[in-house]
Length: 321
Image 1 (tube, rainbow, N blue to C red):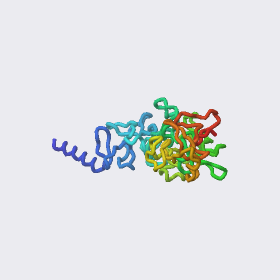
Image 2 (image 1 turned 180 degrees about the vertical axis):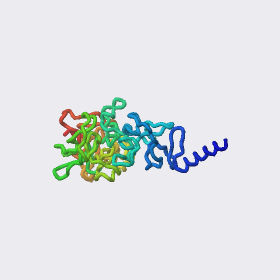
Image 3 (image 1 turned 90 degrees about the vertical axis):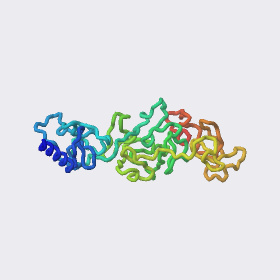
Image 4 (image 1 turned 60 degrees about the vertical axis):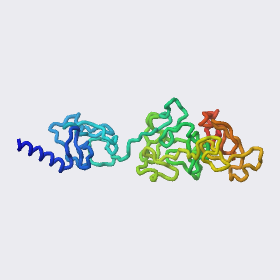
């Protein structure tokens, strides 16, 4: 009896010494993390020896993407690790670290507007990998950064012969980067991107592995690729009142604009380029603010479900062009 107890204690001590104490649901390394594979690089020791490998043995055949070959109750099977498969190679069989491994978490955002239809709101867009309702889409260029324009509810870079579009986007006749030279993803049957690019929101774009810093100015890293920063920047909440705006300004479409009086010809004389007093209609009413001939148009507005009459036109800053 004493000898049996001594052997059991020695076994437990040895397991602790080598960093892989055995539990009923598997084992763990010295950091207390589960040992899901046979990788000596993770502190879990060498593979278990199998006398007769068979086709169903994941140490031989590997596992589906996002899973690893795990030690469960003394046997082996494909399991999904707690991190959702981040850092697991495509084989999933516990291979040594390779170029196919990634530390990026599994992307959980949207990849197209078609995925943003909860509640039947077909006007919802996929911007920067997030579903954005019409009420929170842009309506004017003043809500976009990096000299972008508001196109169909999202902020889009402008372009010209001397200002090309980011990789994966094409310049349209309206001078905005809303074209898609090589659509990819499920929307068109799963077309693959060319080598050196990755599919994000149906565009084949430059990959990024270290966040926004890996992308150029005006671009953000979403789902492993560099895309234009499409989200508008808002400063206030309630239409028609001062809200968070400075004295003399009112909130419209979540942005601040100088209020004016149409009867006074000089109402907007000191308002920089926005020196035209014009009526602007929102979902809550019509208000007079300082604007210009090229912004705060009333021909189209995603927040009011007001689209361009012609299918060949696109909505840019409230104008159908």
